[in-house]
Length: 409
Image (cartoon, rainbow, N blue to C red; front, side, top):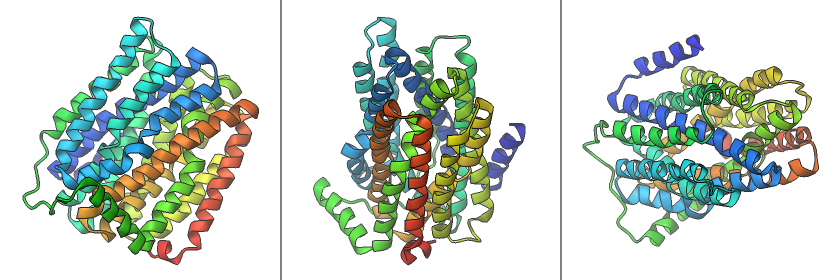
């Protein structure tokens, strides 16, 4: 743990830039809240209902907004001030999530109400990723984007290492509902930090057309530039297989198959983040030597293979080791995909393009979560990991057939 923290801070010192540092810290704090929230939400629904199906449906409600509003978030990021959008997203999520512990305190919480609040929180959250990813090229030189993306990615990964570990410890001291308060406060703290970002002097031209016309313009762009369109299609295909097992399958696996506790699940989640930090370090050191397209495709295959191995995992300690190995491939996918879009497309389209990626990732998470919940009710979750892992491998192999994706950098 100490070594990982040291490597992370060395990355930041090496790439020191006030805006990068502030964005990193803001992401670290809000992502710690996210990590705690996701753990608390899924475990709360499992405790309230004991149903894998309902748990999957509530998880779907938390990710469904990306399918409904994700593209609008990208349009807003290209039409309005991106930093302001990040503030609005953080504050709105904080206020929404604070309602959950209040419903628990007054004894009115049920799965449907929690699902509605999760839906509202995520609706505000869809605005943040496209605004952040579009803002970074405004304040970072093009030749530094891959490294800066690697640095910023470590904030979320470190948060998902620390957050679940903190949650696992706190659950032995405080009640589950107070973890939601932690999440709400983390968003407020992140928004305060963003005040210290130095705004760029020369911002790219903002779109002034009507919202629907902007949306059509973004869709025409990916039709015309097929390599980016193929990249988004591949993202959709892969996330159908990857996200459901991570969000819904893992807590069910730990609780029902391995007989673990909420604290055990928290430490499994922390193991995932540890592996992701290793993957980000690899990207920081190696992205300039290898094509981002090739890195992306091989990481997709790695993701699937390592998921399949969960079929044979016998215990919580073994699950922690395996999830570390699995997690190493995730930042290779996300960082290479982000860098490809930032480097190969005009900044005035970045909000819409990143909203399409966010739609692909989070939208498919909603569908995949519901599907995993249903399948886990009729078969062992071990088989779910095996089947979905094989599907993820196939999606990576399909991507390798595309010369246009392989040549992207």
